[in-house]
Length: 351
Image 1 (cartoon, rainbow, N blue to C red):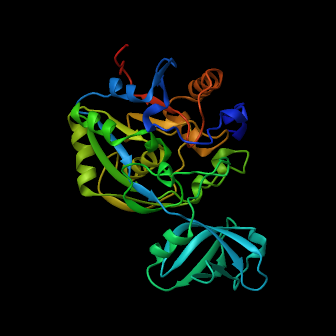
Image 2 (image 1 turned 90 degrees about the vertical axis):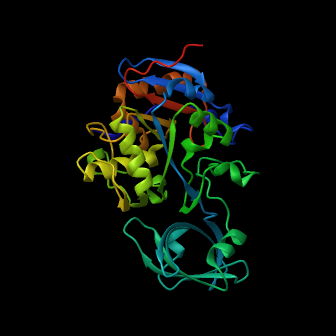
């Protein structure tokens, strides 16, 4: 498959720059992957498509204030560092900008020396590894000096940092938010549970894969960067119970999807407790083994994420839905509206 097969025209003004005041105020496009039909709804209407016995699988990763602005010790040049992966021992995999000014041995200071970082290596993808030194607790220093790492297509300042955090964020370690989860409030989650739908929390820390574009024409040649995931025995057991009783597993976001499909692919379709690193790349031709439905945002043209959703519904269905989204002025990307690719034979309640 060619990368151009996943392109679409998107007016720049449809890229949401700020979150809505009400998390649940976004629109919801419901896609029937069997017929290709779409419905235009509001996000709280997701309740109409979930049935008792189903489960929602949510990613409880918590975004770090991972963007650091510092100065190069030798020259005073400004360097931006984005923390991606904790390698242990105060060493982090990062993206540095401008990267050409950062070589092994380069020392960068942050916050008048409260935090220092020495470059210890250059990775294949152009990233930089840093060893950090500081007094006290690293995450407390980071909370003081770091900023929320908003995606590069968002140009507006975020006044409320918590709006780039899900209400159920718990496990610290992500370089970006699992944005499909941003639409949920505690009140909506309670309504979902009251209807008899189980909430299951798993973890995938979003890393470089989110920021790295596909740079090859043939998508089969693209290599995903590894991201850390963890699924507890409690979560795995809950998902198995849902499947055994005939309920549907609805994944909230592509990160939850990649986690579940990684485990199912390695365990003959079964969900078991597991943790480790995944570089799974899902694109059309992939046969889903874990999930029945997906709640997701609208993704970048030519991205691995639009390929993932095109594997659940076919490519033409998704591209047709995206054209509809543009025509109807849906809001795109991290702070934008949502799409629900519903399980087969799931009608929902007509208003």
